[in-house]
Image (cartoon, rainbow, N blue to C red):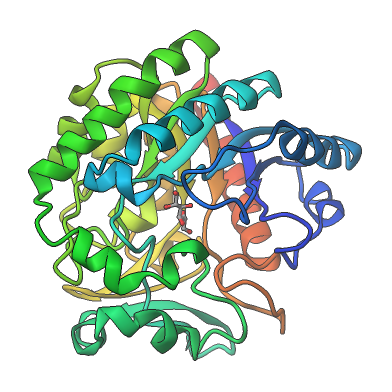
Amino acid sequence: MKMTFRWFGSKDDSVTLEQIRQIPGSPGVVGTLPDIPAGELWPKERIAALKKEIHDAGLEIEVIESVNIHDSIKTGEPERDRCIDNYIATIKTLSEYGIKVICYNFMPVFDWTRTNLYKPLGDGSTALSYEQDEVNKINPENIAETIAKGAKGYSLPGWEPSRMGRLKELFAAYKNITEEALAANLKYFLQAVIPVCEKYDVKMAIHPDDPPWGIFGLPRIVKNAADIERLLALVDSPYNGLTLCSGCFGANPQNDIPAMIRRFGKRIHFAHVRNVKVHSPGNFNEVSHLSSDGSLDLYEIMKAYYDTGFTGYMRPDHGRMIWGEEGRPGYGLYDRALGIAYLNGLWEAIVKANRR
Ligand code: DNO
């Protein structure tokens, strides 16, 4: 297991590389170039500069989260071929700079969605939360403005800025896209990129839909074990793999995370490990990583990774805002650093217990 920490770049992140380096174990960096719109080529100089900056700080980068997928690829419009060509060229360049895993998602229009970015948890900390009733009240075409109002100058942390001004147009484009059509479009994309990934040794790791159920009437195809089974079969190569996000899948209590890790272990290239507290169907909030704070048993999750011989990349995931920190919701320094320390502690104990 290789521990990592997500970083959005010096312009877009309140956390510095120097701070990341001081986290116990100096985790690897999961980087990105957030200003490059989906569908465009990642210029070689930008990738080189990102790698140099991280290296100069004494850290490594082997994972990108994300190279986003243009909507024409998801909807199957003619523009997709140009976007796929750019994606392929980007994979090749990333491989030249030592990138081993690319995390991406195939969610229509919105990446992860929450209804409150600052829900008070009662101990003075805040965390991201989701209430289905609130989502049901939202007109999705105005959702960017609705949610941004509560976001203190950040747009919703995971969203792709280039899509936010085009919501009406995007909803229209997905009007007739069923889950089957979306899966067929994913297959078209994977059939084009996976041979390149095999040649250049870069693994694709799809992120689940967050939350793992349909929202705003849009199709979603990465919600549960049955969906994973289907997507891994679209192109049956180890390079067509998963980002298994425990907190995301775990928002639906029917998703048994340790069982999913054991079942799909060999195809999991990137593990996002965090906890979540589910209150009732469709309602949850994020919590610290500690098992007793949420609905998931992080020991059982780490044990499942150990038992399957996991050698991929792992990172703590969304943290609460604690100790007065201000930053990108879910992506502050303190609670994610506590998360790493806890995950490393669980891992060390499991490794040593199994040696005896
Ligand atoms: C949420 C993240 C996601 C993820 C993308 C991958 O915190 O895990 O936004 O980066 O879905 O494309």
